[in-house]
Length: 124
Length: 515
Image (cartoon, rainbow over all chains, first blue to last red):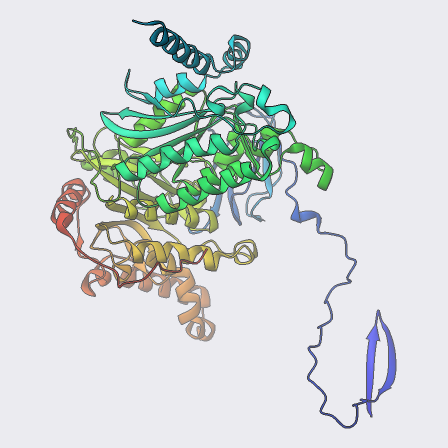
């Protein structure tokens, strides 16, 4: 007989567990399913699905640090204009406007870090 | 001529007319009005003028279920034959959307297989033009078996003759897998490829998506990487196929077509294209264009995994395959898609005796959980495998950064490169300076009175000592450090020397590339 303490959703239970072998036959090792770390019925992560990105939205191609923002919100930009510089992978990467228009929003700050896929700015 | 002759001749002429009429004037007009050419017009556009010869025009379906015996299907919905491209033999099939929606039945598949078998016997490229609604449901599993016969031949022919698929309309379900097995996929702007179409996607997952957003040319050329080339219409697309074949050999026992060289050595401009400051980006395509024969660079998959550039070019009129890190996108780092893209290209070149030129400027494999969980270990391994396995001449030029495992993956000496050149600005090291110093100088920095100054000192020391090409040259990992203006002549000289290279692999059925 072994004593076990288990905790389920914050509540602790103590219980005695007795191993019942049949006719003293050796008990086969049983593969124990390890408990899932997170609640089983967790909602799927929203981030696993790429967010809808409009054609004027520019996302970070990789994680890095925004070292310089060269345009301000409201500025007119041409396709190919450098809007900001993202330092990543030992390179100062120029991030350019994909289309001509107005820089509708800048969603990052100079000196701040961004993750790959984060929207950096939007041109409308 | 007696009456029997006359009757027989008019019967044959009638049969020929029936086949040539395809789906009839209305359906042909519809095909034209949607901006598409007919199956035969595509053959005429693909081959040199007047060289297309149709074969098996009378093959017809044997199916009599569902009233099929009453539905006339001239040519059974596909045109097959051969002709000449740049004067060289090639075989092709072209599905006819005006006949039964180009649906694939038993006889249709048999025609395609016949043409493929001929291509294999004659050791000539095979081009398959797809414009089909899919399997002919009335013919049941015989139509599925037809697909299987084609997949089997695609696989057996892989690495023996170049196989090119051209998607010029719908290509759905099992029909996608023949193109997927072939070497290159061309798509027009109004074509689609998907395993399950929008209607099935909606009924199974509830997702509402248009056919273009699900499997259009833009998606497959940029996101999925399924398509290699995209063109706006049929004529430009078939012209692209002709252009590609101009770089390729007829088969794996042959050398590529050579054209009179138009060598313009622009190597002198290289030092102004590539900034010495390795933090500054540049477009590596400018480097390629300065090295190869004028206007000879033909890029493949230009919108997919833009951090690596692949394509064919010519040096003194002879085809080479080029793989280059693109500093302009993701700093030229290697990740899952770039590894897949480059590896498949390297293996194609190796199959068809095309020498490889690798232009190296690579900071690292891209870090992050997205990459690790996506399996960068097994995808990146393909690159090492493909380079190591390739027995064609392999020349590398280390332009700037060559750090760590990514350096080793980009055709390094140890994985079988024949000649490795480096420019004097090259930085060939186990890792970047700040990363290295923070590991090997950790204690020194922590114990220093002024840690920041100590770190700076160690960084300078590391940069001076290791961020150059000379340690690699001293240890034999670089064969020669060359000046930018010598680049083209050195590379060209190396490929000339390597022409008679023989390196064989030990006997095996085939290796087990990590997929």
